[in-house]
Length: 114
Length: 113
Image 1 (cartoon, rainbow over the protein chains, first blue to last red):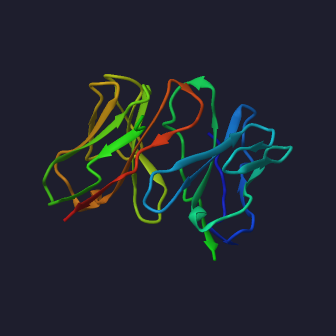
Image 2 (image 1 turned 60 degrees about the vertical axis):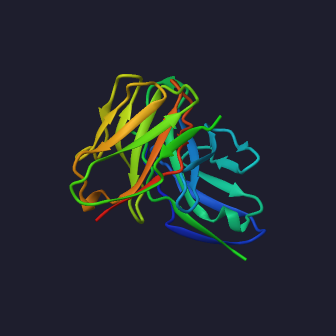
């Protein structure tokens, strides 16, 4: 699975949009971009994933550049509860096989301030 | 539907003691994983299982053993605990057709004195 690069930390004001970037310049054509988050002391939680089209769900939006070398997770109206570490991961999906090579790096520590 | 449940959630051990962490999932998932997470670090894979009766080593397997006697349960054992094994342990699972979505438990915080 391709490697990703994320900023170590970011701040956002409550009620504003939080835009978390991720670089994945070595992504392959069959690899998806996944985002997870980990609220303090809890298990990581799946947020969203996408291949090349922009995706939106009840939690967030995912914007993937046309060349797929980078993406941005958008939390449209950040709340204090969104303070967490956000992990960007790229991997092949929709096939048989495990996730033993999945790498959860250090992610981006997002702090939402009142 | 409880998802992924880990027990115990907290435990304090003395060096040399043994213990077992239990991970149970009720989603009929084939794949199960044990990770550890140390302060300021990402998750590191300890062991994993691709199905009932199978186990395999991950990135940091030394000092740990695992068993998957039943599909729904994945046990992580520490035969002789060491202070270096003080950590938060997370279990995760997913189904055979890998959509890439891992389901995690809430974590087990282990302290070895």
